Amino acid sequence: MSLEEAGIPTIAVHTHVFARLAKATALANGMPTTRQAYVPQPVVDRSAADLRAYIEGIDPVSKRPFMQEVIEGLSGPLSGEDLKGMSFDRSRQRLLEPDTEENLRQFFIDNYFTDYLPIILPTEERVTAMLKGTSHAPDKVVGRLRPAEFREFWELTVEKVAVNAVMAGARPEYLPVILAMASTGMTARSSSTTSFSGIGVVNGPIRNEIGMNAGIGAMGPFNHANATIGRAWNLLSQNLQGGSTPGESYMGTLGNWYNYSATFPENEEKSPWEPLHTRYGFSKNDSAVSVFRGGRYTQAGFGPRETWKEKFKRVFAACAPRQSPLLVMDPIVARLFTDLGFTSKEKLIDWIAENATLPAREYWDDQWVQTLLLPHAVAGVEPYATNLKAAPDDLLKMFSADEINIVVTGGETQGAWKIYEGTRNNKGTVSIDAWR
Image 1 (cartoon, helix red, strand yellow):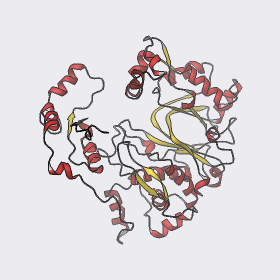
Image 2 (cartoon, one colour):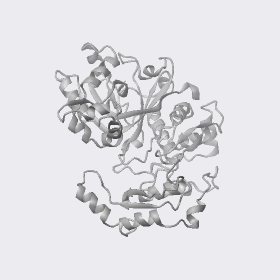
Image 3 (cartoon, one colour):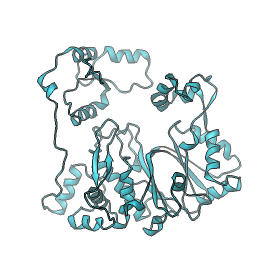
Image 4 (spheres, one colour):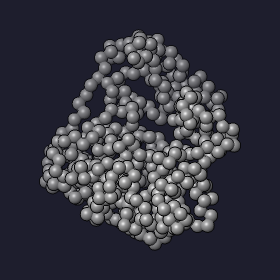
């Protein structure tokens, strides 16, 4: 039972940069008159005196004393508007009225349906052609998306995914990959303030069937399938979850250029190790895609050189603890690691899990550790409770082995590697074959 259901009045408190989002969320959930008060942003890295000044000062949204907003919100009687709530039509018309190409393109831009790059207008004929890429019915529900955990889910159908695939410039044979990514329920356009993006990795025979590039420039804009599949995932995440509007349903402070397209295949033919999807129950002959919530940090280097252990310890220490790393390396790098005795990805993953450490003072000072893990530690959940008792200079492990993933891709022109934040969701690796 909620506090409100128990008859206990409550008021929501937010920082002022979330005012539009808080109001939009209340509206979307049928509570447009929810009592809310605001303090200035930021609250991180502020002294106790600064935070007290927020409470004793002015609400930056209402321009009234903050405590007056709180007291009146808790004690004021409910009005008729409070009690009636609100509902509204979330559907959109399937077809637009005929118009010129120029006007229709501007309509898509004005309504935030695009990523501001030119799109292919999704005519009925083009969407019908796209749907030939799958055997599934146009009205079949693929999954549900939302920009943040506190927003409502929107259902998406095969046809709606096909519309966005057309807009992205994809081809029908790419549609099963795009449908599989959409089915994970993971958005590529989260409203998180930390500006992450979605990253997709494709494995199995479909990589070669549709001409994806796992060689030179695999992670760049040098291949039609790579680029448009990733773009389609971003566009459908924007359009089929209730929007991705800065200041309203998108709050990433810096933004992220990976939101244009961040999907690539693993170079299974040149890798000395098992492909990524076999770690999650698929065979080499299965086609699957893994999606990651990531891109908030990037580290890079070359090798392994003579001092690779010291290098890896430094770069992993620079990653965010508990924000899973995705290590992407050229086949040259993978082969050099096998020469060092790492005959499987798992052996290298275990080394990283053991050696990626931070002093306890730095570990517990991390924003995400404080937000997500400190409550568990205080509640006695292990291993966080034990870690909380560590001395400031004690080294704490940053990741468990199951949080670390390795992908081999690239064209063997340099022994380069990169590390991205890449957290898998509950359906992190899904079948593409199921959507053919």
